Image (cartoon, rainbow, N blue to C red; front, side, top):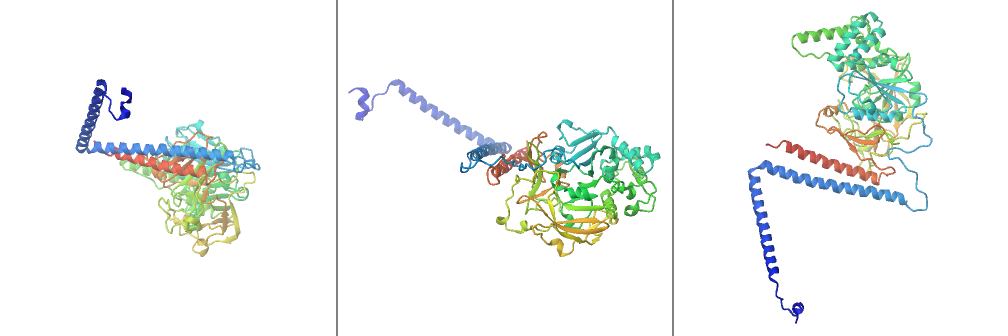
Length: 605
């Protein structure tokens, strides 16, 4: 038989010499590679035992590779999920009815809403004088959040030489450059005129320039004067407020009603401590004044802001020997003596908000409201979500209901925040927290606000035993010892009371607010304590997109980072929620990667 049939009969055919040589070399190669691998492994093990740092480095490298692979898998899953959601939206549920119109992920389209970019009747100026050559690290986030209130609000930021990027600012943020030492010059000239001491202009300018250059924080002593000191910049505005930079804003338009703009002289926002601790003072973040004679120059009743030798009225009176000029001269003299002795010196700063709050609370012709509409890190949830406006999307500042106080950065002095119905209910009964739930409807000229009064005004008793950081003579406190302060409202919310000072009398009134299910929204988020971490180089502070681009961020006490925006039309149970969950997973992996890198930096050698 031929050789090609030998295999069929069970006889092994003879193999050519070349094939035998090829098999031999293959076996030699395999054995050689095996020996090389074994030797390399033994050498590596011996090296790592002699070099622990190298072993740790190799382990970190392996962990980072695994985490990077997890990131790739998650991103692929997220892309697939969003693609599936888009296909489902395109195909429709049954095919018999036309699909609904596109719904904005951060706000619903409303044909009845105003199409104008500005309110036709009211305009609020938020005034911020900034001293210093450097801006806060979170400044870009603050400025970007200002755009969400453009329908009603402008921010006026006065500065001397800060590195401002004017081109990156929203249209409703105005930068006013006063030049080197210009802040002290401007305040000196205006305060000399307003206190009736034009002959002291040069002295006031010199002393204020020294104070602002030496202690930039001193500017807060003059907050109540902003409406008069910057009056020349307020043409075209109906209202003004002092404010700070350690905050982010939602859509203020949704939190101010037309009735408040028309009927009140002053409106200030609290974060619930007026109910829990009875604190009735005008907040430094928001104290909206109607631009009128009734609110002009009220601050002159504070002795340290009054004319030289003035009594300072009833709120800050001290016998007529003080006054603005006297206060500045004392600080300057003490600072000079300390410098001559080579000693550090930090002057006593007067509680401008404390004194001014007392002045307002003893002016019977004023109509004032203290409204619970702000979120602060003292009592906030561990995470606060900020949605920036842009591309037709609405702005919002919000946190998950039921977790109030869990992110307390230091806590309120005294009793903790009272539980709400949502926080006391079992987790299974609480509404799901969706950071991308649609915020209140777009603004209308009617400005309905987000709160509705419930019941009549009820007389309120006051005392002076609260706000320990304020001088006793300035304190104004609500008596919240009654059972009413702990009762939940009809909507299951705690702290649902606003306070009023009308015709010289104090009142309280229950309110109900409109929030998306599972969320608590605020006009502002004030991070007075969290900013201590934000100032350091370590915390993660994410970059901010250009004006007009929508974005979302989550703020914690460690820093803030972006959230993946839900695609337009996403529902609370569809791709949007999945995008949020996957973003959380990615953030967790990112934190683990940073921890590995941090550990590597601390390894010896």
